[in-house]
Image (cartoon, rainbow, N blue to C red; front, top):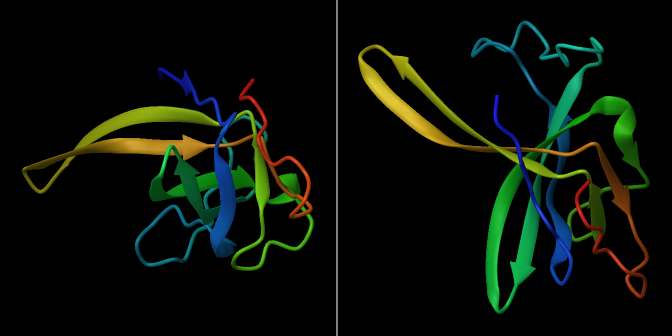
Length: 119
């Protein structure tokens, strides 16, 4: 699958919604896990502000890759952020979009730098 590195230098990033478990099915009976490591995944909504534009993006990360308290409004750094285009068909309906995955999410001091370049 193609991955596109996302450069967050110059962006302001903060938690819009704290991490929640990611599920592999709609019934929420099976937790989603990383295919390579088996680690459970979580998602969080991150407010991404750059050049006067703001957008909330949902970011997936491994459960152990979260550092610090990630309450709403907490400034964060996203290490190794990548975008992955996806497409699927369900009940004859084609759907497509972009998913975001990070190697790590770290809470940062409000006065510190929260802009890390993606790996």
